[in-house]
Length: 274
Image 1: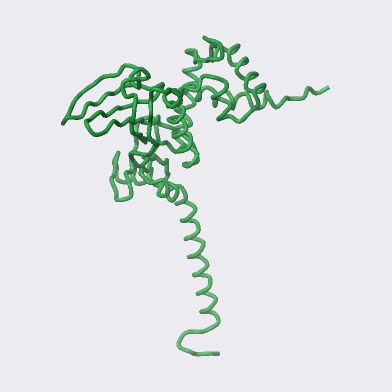
Image 2: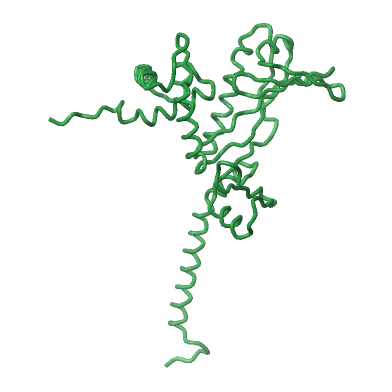
């Protein structure tokens, strides 16, 4: 009798990868994980229990998980190997005005450090896994949050996840009755690193490690292959589609050549007909 393989077992390896990444980004409760994974509560609990028994994660508090040393190493391996082939969101920042409770916000910031320049006091620190800055002047108070570097294959999905992580990090402040925040908005264009074979060829042929162009930077950074770095999500899409576009051009050129050859056979040169 052949033992049937359950769906849980088939997907466990893939789920391990997803869960390790989520916990490393600060999504350490089952509720926050389910928002991303879109799987039933029972299914997630199955994978979490199995990962605890495998020594990859630990349940150090009721419903709160953390990576073990083994889990951290495996997650780092996934990131290192997959990261070379995936698009990476290099940098993106969001900001919102602080209308009330600036002092209370400091209680949410880990290890805040202050400095002053041109009448503006700047505080830097951490909010969960994210770097934050608070700018305080006579006219305005601004909270700015920098997203983590994120990997993926779809630029819009990466952008969505990065923004959602920032929104989730602000949940405590939003619920705090002593704090009033404005609308969250981008404070810069996102910077993308797109792995590309053409970028690899350009750097190899020119024996360069970096080339700047009007459409971005061709660069080879630590832990990655050659990237095309741009600050436009549409431009990133065009770069990814470049091989397909070149194939289309090649096919169109071949069709034009074939058409010309057929016409030459139908109409001999100099109007001479036999």
